[in-house]
Length: 362
Image (cartoon, rainbow, N blue to C red; front, top):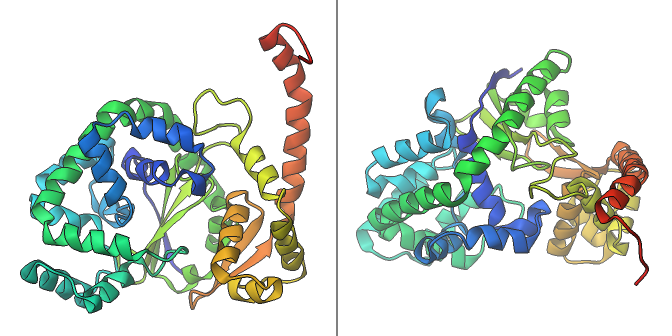
């Protein structure tokens, strides 16, 4: 059984929030609001991040390796600044998958100043854990960043400094208490549940059987990742999972009244194909490929629907020791969604009248 370790720090959310703001639909965030936040950045930094975020992962392994006191936004930016510019990209993409083949490919691309098709195929292995396949354009952008590593290093530092100044410094203060509470609640839960069950609870439905063959598992809370998780292998036989800790009644967009979780669940259930998927999953767990055959749809289409159902918390993900993913229905989430809907309807009427002051059909 793996040894359980804990980590925490707003540095994780600095990078995760950037990831979410560039993929708002995958996290149930309003695209217009996300675009508004990105528009606060100066144009050079904004355009740089729009391209870089196509290939740059959330640097979980690097952040986890830093001293605890440096896992704040300013701390992690200072740590990045201390790294020579030409080495910053390599630091940000470090993980177990960064093996000798990938490292030698990076060196070959830098020495030649160009990436071959074979080089891009090897770089593609860095993204093999992604549910959505990486695009060729993203691989080409990564190779260009490798070739121009010193300039990339300067640009990423400048972009993070600007992002912190225009948005995240204030956001960090808002989310800190929730991260502290999330860690405390998770640690209390760890005293009651075995590791695999603990991960399933914190991840809102991922049964991670790989934990049984790992030597060490790290868990860290994040406000911005909710309700999804980020999983990484910082070293061989080690897993780092950043789990969402935002309360159900809290929204990513400050001041929003209707709970994000409720809206996401209702949207997920308002599609005929997704209802059919839930019906099949009620019968038995299934892989995306087997569902594609049952539904007579392309596998990427099924993966898209499963991602929406996962975001709504309506499915379990069963990850075997071999890494195979199977999906199953989360019946308890359906019941919880209906209860949440009734609570919202019963509690909102008086509040709405108090806010509006009157009523009209016109």
